[in-house]
Image (cartoon, rainbow, N blue to C red; front, side, top):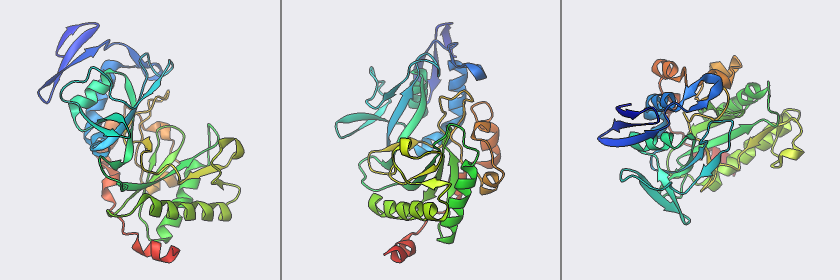
Length: 296
């Protein structure tokens, strides 16, 4: 904190002065993470988080008094808005575009603890990547990594390289970088095929039932969430969970070892990123033309 009192200070980021209020407020009590610590961790995450939030419509979840108190979704840009904050309008909503460190720190000071960006870029109708959301029906699901591995193997047989990433909560997403030009409708077709295939092959493990009350203990292959205007937890976003977990890309070998998503959190993510870098960037953009020709 560059200057201030115990209840307020300022930081300088890229030439912009940002006021920080209540820096000692505890946001994640189980981990002892205060707002000041959180902002330090956001700076560590910034090169990675900004990569997957820049030039997209951002929704945040705010927890003004920490993760165990009331929260709310923020779609419209908060006011007053600093001059450095970029926004973009979609369907009458003025969204923040998270493309700078000052904007990230400003949002962090507002206790935006989760960042959920659109699947597409600003003023673009086409998806930036393809994502399957693997969502357990149970709060604790010991089979989640097994399920993700089976889907990864199915994608691999189709010639599709992918990267698993923890949601930071209970689910796992399978991230597929794609060559530009495919539509959301096309990708949903592959998703539906994969989901249906997994249900037929492993009926005691998977479901494509949209309503949670009808899923029992089955793991949901959600291919519908990936759509224009919708969002999902961005890669490298923190989550408002007791573990202070971070949505973290994984190696497939780690999935095989049945890693626990809670193992990747704000207090240790820097070490991992220093060691492994951005795993999502290491898979080339996939050409899906052959897959579409087969499905037709």
